[in-house]
Image 1: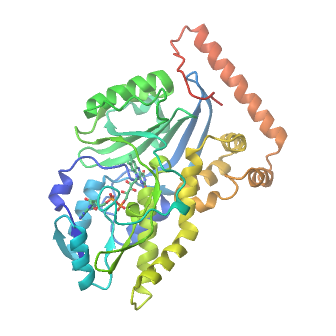
Image 2 (image 1 turned 90 degrees about the horizontal axis):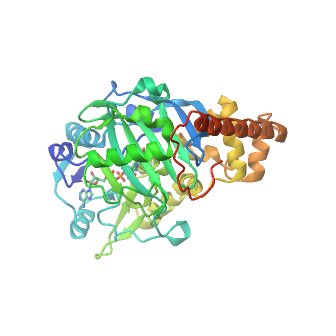
Image 3 (image 1 turned 135 degrees about the vertical axis):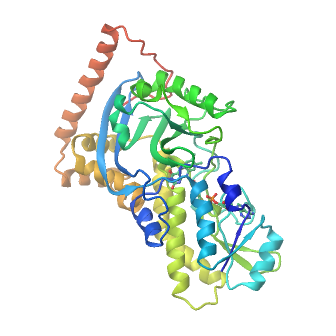
Length: 422
Ligand SMILES: Cc1cc2nc3c(=O)[nH]c(=O)nc-3n(C[C@H](O)[C@H](O)[C@H](O)COP(=O)(O)OP(=O)(O)OC[C@H]3O[C@@H](n4cnc5c(N)ncnc54)[C@H](O)[C@@H]3O)c2cc1C
């Protein structure tokens, strides 16, 4: 086996910060089975605390529940550098240099199969867009990510697990326990802003420190619950930040080269989702696992038709990852809010919801179809009256927060949110 990388292990380590790439349960276990858990000391995420914010800075309700299996986010600079060294140790030939289409043609002539896993920034024209499987043709969110440390854990102990802060229609923020190359335990903060809305503030950011300052201002304005936690935080390094956007796309998995030979694409090269649900690296791992099993069980030849058929087989389950992500990119629907509300009262429902990050297919149809959601709640013994009672509780709580803020004269600034809070 030969692996081509555009960078050496040292260059990968010295590179800019890479995306959070938090892996959930089964994918963490799979890497460990392959002997690739190089950081047993890395902090694992075992719970998620999700806050649904109102448009006035309060929290309408929270879902706090365990993950069935721990999640793990290790800095990809470490992971990729160590992965290259490990492949060489196990006997693979490692070739360094940027691969071009002409190189692919040469490689395809000399190998049983060439797999392109170059991500979403290189060789992008190679794999044709598959319009039938694409839900969007433009970015749905503006993204900002920065890795931070020095935060005040005592101010918000919920951050011992992952924290998700949602202000529907305006912003989603994910605070993910992260093993950073330079400082070890840290938090990777991924922010998804509705384009043009009050959280879309990072476009002009040019340094990590500037990004952290903008983030602190945004949190004070929109998510003040998190201000005390974030106030003392600093970026883990000048390069561990990202600003930009992702245009989701699904491409055809097999590309035909100028010579007529073909290559298979996997990972972001063929299925690129918005990071909202943290699925890109999970999906790439699931694809790698599926294809590793199918390829080793088959003697070949790996024709374009055989590879396309295998991808279609993978897509039967893989499509749920895209459906999950596109479903959450859409405005939250009333029945989904009801399920979240029920989950705020019943940890078991929260646990089932969070299992969706590990296995998106487990959320279908009950979190995305109204009738199925009502049946699901009924099976959990949550009736319409219970939901009404929960709503009343939320109404009283929000009213209390407003009154408390007014009485104590707190400066709860009212953002021009694009849609009303829950
Ligand atoms: C802000 C943000 C947060 C994210 N958070 C998560 C998360 O929490 N969980 C999750 O699952 N996903 C997350 N993702 C998505 C995830 O990072 C990607 O989906 C995942 O890294 C894709 O893996 P890949 O192997 O397909 O491509 P990549 O990780 O992009 O790897 C491609 C590799 O190929 C190399 N390469 C590129 N071109 C060439 C070439 N021509 N020749 C040789 N080598 C080449 C690159 O240097 C790189 O090492 C996030 C993304 C963003 C933007």
